[in-house]
Length: 243
Image (cartoon, rainbow, N blue to C red; front, side, top):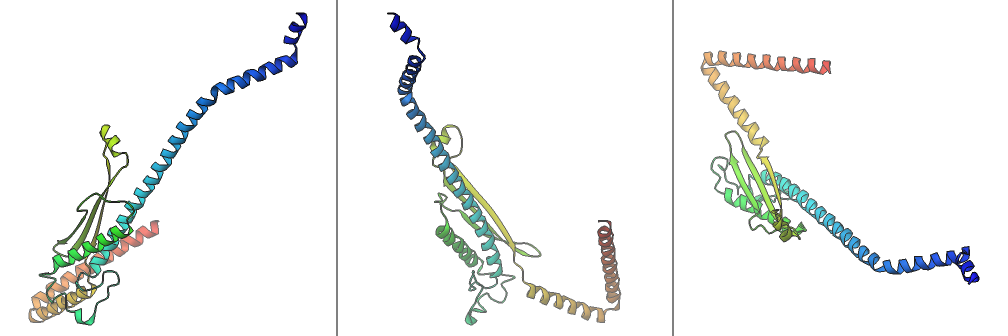
């Protein structure tokens, strides 16, 4: 009996007994480790999928904005002739007069030009887009006729379904991610502007030669414009010197 008690209190037996207890405790925790690993792995995997989908949505939004900007700029550049190539601006010799002579006043082919630009955008969205759009009519192209200029406007609105959209609806959130971009461009014709300016100046000279009072009025107006330009130049010089 004394030998048993001495053995139980020996350091060697104590170390062995602690090792056995640790082994039994590890054996009892092995199932909980598996469950915890499964939960953590699922959460990490779900976060990775969410980040990847967010990157795809960001790419789609940037691409659609870039496409709208390019389309409206190219559409404004080739607006004077419906047969011009939208990408390169090329036109065949036989199609130089396709735009008509008085299209700046009455454009009979405006709808045709708008439809062509819309088709251009639609083709590139379907070719280079990554996600599927669920909006049936996402592209809107229109022309705004102002007094001094014409402005072309492109609006694209795409909807993308979120994978967990049904779950988000339970919490009152939207199940679609909406990308809405807008781009505008003024139809500029430098050649036509110079031609119209020269025409106005010729008319002014003719009227001033026939009417001396009108010439005096024109000289006064030109003098006022020169003074305004001089004052603006002085203002810019003073501001630049102060900086």
